[in-house]
Image (cartoon, rainbow, N blue to C red; front, side, top):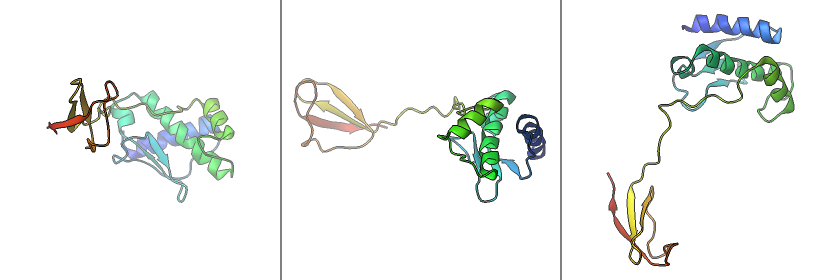
Amino acid sequence: MTNDELLQLTKRLSLERFGRPFQHQIFFNARLKTTGGRYHLRDHHIDINPLMLTEHDEATLEGVILHELCHYHLHLLGRDYHHRSRDFKRLLKAVGGSRYAPASPNQRRRPRYRWEYQCQRCGVKLLRQRRFNVSRYVCRHCGGRFKLIGQLK
């Protein structure tokens, strides 16, 4: 789907679901990583994460577009457009937009453990992202002191 096709889809959804025209721009923005879309308050354009179409279906894309259109129309009407507002929640439910963008299956990442510690008394091993001062902390199981085993690769 091109940006022009996205614009036509957005204009159609805006007229069908909101009864109001969409008169600004909407683009795919590949730099969006953790969000489905973004509405810009200053110039009223909308960015959409292209992963909403490539990794999910068109219904998901429409849900994200409707979500951003809720921000758009409420802002232009001078009403509260924030996620927490009652107006936003009611409008989103009325038009059938998605409350949250689905997570990308490729973006679920596990914490990177870099440091390994071991209790000198009971032998329990800990994996940590950051180093810590072994003289300040004790094992929660036995109260023993930790020893830095080394850095993981």
